[in-house]
Length: 119
RNA sequence: GAGGAAUAUCAGGCAAUCGCGACUUUGAAAAAAGUUGAGGAAAGUCCGGACACCAAAGAGCAGCGUGACAGGUAACGCCUGCCCGGAGUAAUCCGCGAGAAAGUGUCAUAGAAACGAAAACGGCGUAAAAGAUUUUUAUAAAUCUUCGCAAAGGUGGAAAGGCGAGGUAAGAGCUCACCGGCUGAGUGGCAACAUUCAGGACUGAUAAACCUCACGCGGUGCAAUGUCAGAUAGGUUCGUGCAGACUCUGCUCGACGAGCGAACGGGUUGACAGCUGGAGUCGGUCGGCGACGAUCGAUCAAGAUAAAUGAUUGCCCAAUGACAGAAUCCGGCUUAUCGAUAUUCCUCUGAC
RNA sequence: CGGGGCAUAGCGCAGUUUGGUAGCGCACCUCGCUUGGGACGAGGGGGUCGAGUGUUCAAAUCACUCUGCUCCGA
Image (cartoon, rainbow, N blue to C red):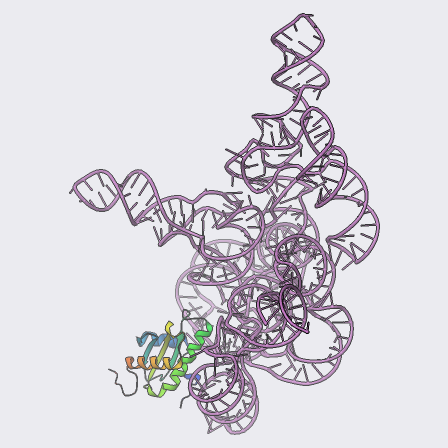
């Protein structure tokens, strides 16, 4: 149900590059999202936190919060969507509720929630 | 009670639910259950080792590092003790702390002069000796020069032992007392050194400038290295090489003995071992001032590879809890850090 | 994981090796030239030398520690 096994997470350089080059991107104050709708590889997720955001502890914590956010809200997202979430500087001291709010906001922008029809 | 000094320890805890890495068991598989899962600095990469490979792991020079003395250690640039110097009323803290009389360099500006025991500037002195001039009959007197001296120069970070007294033509460790320093001898100490006595032609600073002395250092690093599987084409051109290339840090010797380098054009981006049982952790006894050593007993506590620890709720505390994330492993150093606790010691004040 | 380099005026750079005065170009300000502007000529201002500690009489320079940026090898 709310699991997030390792197979789902994007790790390969080429897979990242595929989403970056073929997908669409959206952004708000705290997140950047790259979205690729594809029926071959479904429901993959990648995380990226740049070096400018903070030191290793901060970056690890943001990645964990993003992973938790995706885990809890995975069923509300259309199943054939692969995405990459990139954190921006304002997430440095964020809590989980803030991240969930920003995530839902950006998903609405990208129109990948279940019930919203993509054009 | 107040103010300090040193050392050591901790780095929120417990429970429930969901989620992640590794291992074990069950299972055909999916999966389930159980166990376990970041630090005192994991950081910076500043040192030292283990381990692996590189001619035989070799020699010399160069180069680099360390620097009171004695010890500890696998080793160290670390630690302990002690000496010396400095800071503090004290507990205590700080110190790249060898050699400047082996040699070379530098010491701007200022100043007479910045290392040579000098005298060009300015100065002190005519006692002795020589010369010149003036006065004088002459003796003699005065001035100047040669000469003697280094006390006093508006300097400077630093002026050649300091200060006082004697001494002298003027002066000078020339002599004396005190202080400092050097040399020699004695005593104490393993030693650095301390202390006592005696004696002097008592001649800067800089070695985190070159250098000298003593000691140490072969190079590259787990993406080391080994095994398995797989891919493409071991291809073309140029240069170089048995007159010895390449390789073993730079050079020389010595060793090996046939390929090597560059450009173009391609292929791969797997798996396993190394990978955590080790100079390991905890406790006791003995030796040592101590660092530490010896011995006995108990115990096994991360091992990932786009890289695992998070979230929510409840309770408690010192109450929004700092700095911060293992990547081959250890011993240190340095840097960051909200706070809390324990022990020992010092100073001041008050009471008995 | 390992090894280098850089930081100096608003910008780009010298000076560091061999320690004593911080300089060059562009930019800025003032004046002249021009009907006016540009160009040109003359003059001027502006720098805790990335931060700290030490060595030295004296540190941009020498030594050590830290910060930021950047490059290279596998």
